[in-house]
Length: 559
Ligand code: GLC
Ligand code: CA
Image (cartoon, rainbow, N blue to C red; front, side, top):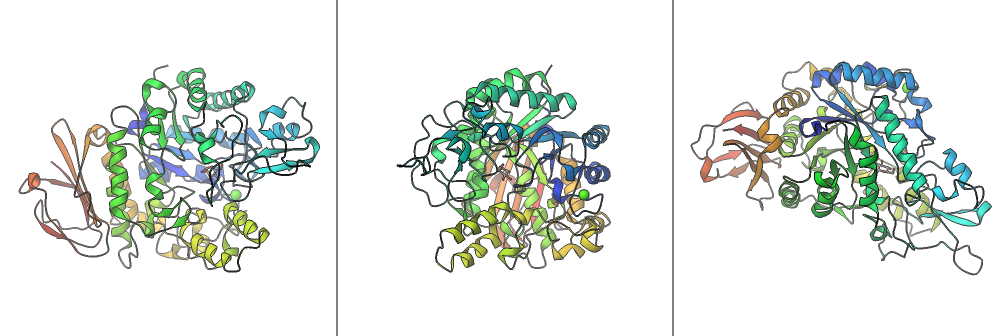
């Protein structure tokens, strides 16, 4: 099978199924809801869908805790629905990338149900067990913490051991050092590829190989142990094995979710000659406005640009990059990267799209981003649904930290909570934004009367139409796919400005990230040249000369 590497010229749309479209009024999005929106996706012009997990799951972490990899979650539908969905996508020229969650399973998975029974159960070694420390062996085996807070170990009575869970206690980590586990994962991957899916987004894939002996991590108030399981000792070997044994037999793609990935490690994972993953999501650029990846801090455009530039140069010609601002774990990019946009919502949303998607790498748009959906105005901790928030509150309650801890937590989550990206898709201005006729599992953003698909599809100047235009412009464009990257004014805190060049043709991008007028000096090599405007968010254009950029003004020239 020849691998065509179609992902280099794709536009991928991420669907978080729970929040996309509910077909039966139970308040939860489902596969038939997705089926009903396939024409919408086709019209937008995307070429591939990444579907967050839809497998059987008790939903401790909204499907990222799988109890059966070969079946569909009850709330989402059936395997027959899945078959119909994938056929409907393929009929419309849309590919499907599934979410492969293989660092851990649900504790309700058959393997774990068996594994916890006794130390000599055949599935025991599918997971990571250690005896407790201390006289009565009741102290946790090491200081590693769950990514959601608290210890990463849970005691199991029947075997008098602890098991490792880097996420919730209902997400026990699989033991990838066991060849049987690796074989199981290979079989699961093969099962879905044979059934018609076109690739995988590999959940927290950088965590699957743990350092032998599981040594204590250095102190970190938010997450301990990272250095002992991020890019662990056998990671490249295991991914190579999966690639050679299964993936390379299909014309599919993989994108690894890569917490801890930088340019160097990104290259190791995606260098084509190494045959591991095709692409990665690195997170450096969405960590610019955080302290230790957890607490919010002020956004600094110059820093963001530095990171973009590093990846544009670093992966070029060897590995392959991904372009994204949003996903189901991130707050919305509005107002995150634009600040208070006031009455300039549409300009700001379009500007962000131009700034991001003219770079090299596979582009991702997250459901609702094409409408300019925004963060939700959360007022109290009870409004959050996310297990991460609940976990943190639990830890605060348990260790009875200072009374204002909850106030601080609220402030942090108002900015950073994953729920911002998970509020229901805003389809129209009817009740619940047309997402459901029942009670939505998570509140709909109150701005749905202004920001919704129906309204935007009827308005030629909307954010939605802008995305459609940008997607069509980008697909098949050799400058965007292959061109080199050169940044201008890298230290400007207001404007992102870069050029792409390929076989004598250029794209030139100017994006004002601020809600204010900003003077702009045209780089010498462009002054007086004739550039064709291919994308812009204001109707007029003074051309390639010194100028005053309007609030959030952005323009893409071809020359
Ligand atoms: C990934 C997912 C996130 C999930 C976690 C554990 O980071 O994107 O939603 O909570 O893995 O599976
Ligand atoms: Ca439903």
